[in-house]
Image 1 (tube, rainbow, N blue to C red):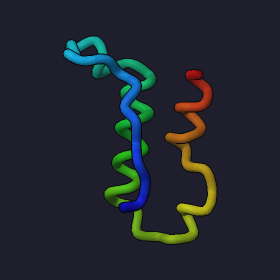
Image 2: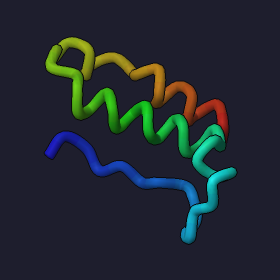
Image 3: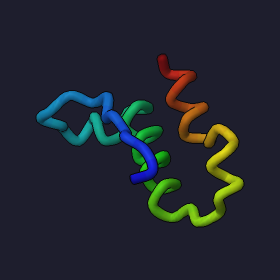
Image 4: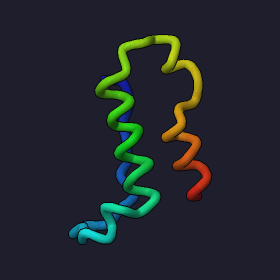
Amino acid sequence: MLEIVEVPVARPRGPEQLLSGHFLATKARLEELIHDRVPAARAAPSSAQAAARSLE
């Protein structure tokens, strides 16, 4: 396990929620975790993490 990711989008999710900034930032982070194979990239904050922080 690389990371526990909380999804800040309530259920049930409607189509409009799938386009929200919180959902898209979470989706981007999950894609980075799934597809990123470069260990050095994990040391620096990801663009998804930065986007999620900007939405708080």
